[in-house]
Amino acid sequence: MKTDSEIRVLRQGGQRLSLVLKKIVRGVKPGISSDDLDKLAFNLINQYGGKPSFLNYQPDFAEKPFPKSLCVSINETIVHGVPLKKIIIKEGDLVSLDLGMEYRGLFTDMAVSVGVGKIKPRYQKLIKVTKEALNKAIRASKIGNTLGDIGYAIQSYVEKNGLVVIKNLVGHGVGYLPHEEPAVFNFGKPGQGLKLKQGLVIAIEPMVTFFSGEIKEKQDGSFVTADGEVACHFEHTVAITKKGPIVITK
Image 1: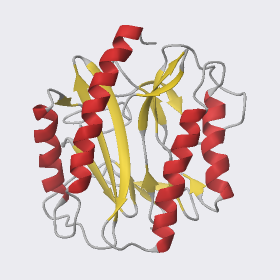
Image 2: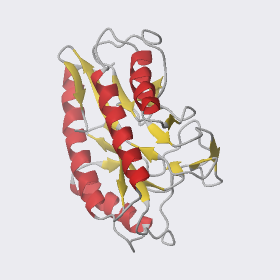
Image 3: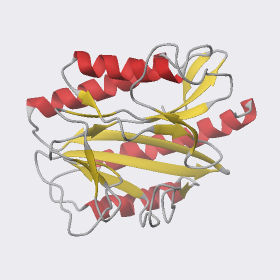
Image 4: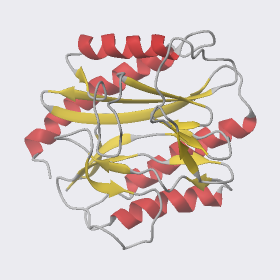
């Protein structure tokens, strides 16, 4: 649980993080390497007075620290894609960018997915549905609701549009650390799970694909769809307040 003053600092950090990610999105184009985007992220975060929270960070679920500042996950890679010079972004790719930043001792986290140049209409739909699923989850993030309400908001909208949520990867609490309790699932039942209270800050991050939500973990720690289909990922850090949900990373 975060105090009002901590939420104010988180909002300052989140605003900076959103500006950084906006500039990185502008840099996504055919021919650029994912490592180039990572270098841009590192430099911009420092320019905005923060520290990259993923660089050399090792969460409980990882076998080794993450070696970069930015996660660049392309096409079938869902999350935790490791940027490399040899990974070149191409026309038609779907690229997910996930970035965390520490600012004045507090952490924020966000992700967006973008199409590179002209993409398939089905990819356009995937992006649109995943983004709107996040918006619906944010609207459900009110005092008195539950984590089940958030998960249901995501799952019901995604499935209504003929897509599937990836159930084995979750959102999380955030603030004092890059990952905190509670786990924020992208599926659920209304009224079930932890009740949302004033001061809770969570990273809500729907991950969506086409036919199967099954996943595989690669040796580098990234997660990919088991069937090789493209996946999409959006994320915001959200504070639960008396005035309703505040999107920290707006």
